Image 1 (cartoon, rainbow, N blue to C red):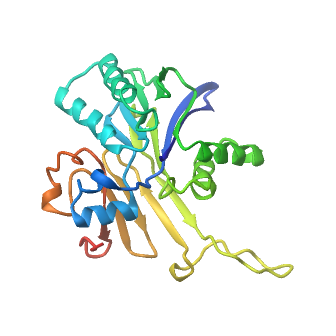
Image 2: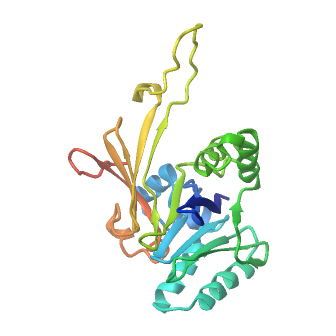
Image 3: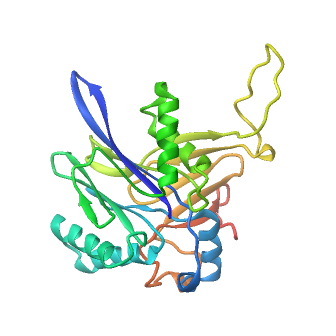
Length: 287
């Protein structure tokens, strides 16, 4: 089902309130039936292990996110827009809503974020047979994940505006097996006036620690302990995540494919798919 959450977050700067737009999405995907046959063997194993990107920046001023049980329908929208080459905001929403409304509501839902030349953004949510415009908050996909995110924010009022932490918590603890993978963060940069995959540094060290009185909590960890540090590199094209402990980079891209047969695959060519690259040698690591 997936989980995508978009929000306009207010920030005070130079005596003015600015609304910053953020989009968070997971990467987990399940391949089954006819959909599973659309992938080459290496690519399929990579997608099953690392997922794919569900928030796709199609232009500096447009980001399309999707969730649902039929990712082929999301690809259908991307292919339609690719064939049009140029399209208006109204045409984009028409095609997205048409695909959504002609199928089961759970098959595909969209969050479309747009920006104008003045840097003003709009969050548009397409789900449950409706289009909702000018949203301050929108979500699609797993209701269990949304509930987990809201509960985290309620239980941690000091972190109520830390949406990345709340979203990450929801992915790991919502109990929905269709949600998971890596948290992906897209933001609109007010200075460049472009959507981008945001830079970030995440340290994960989930393990039990037994501490005596006066002992310090160990925040870091080793790869053997299951700990890792993920460095997200800013980009407006690819999602790039460096893992220091493993000495690898996880690259989600549409510019390269693991297999020749997938370079022009009409069912997947617009998706950002995962490739693991060794940081030292630059060689692709086999799946």
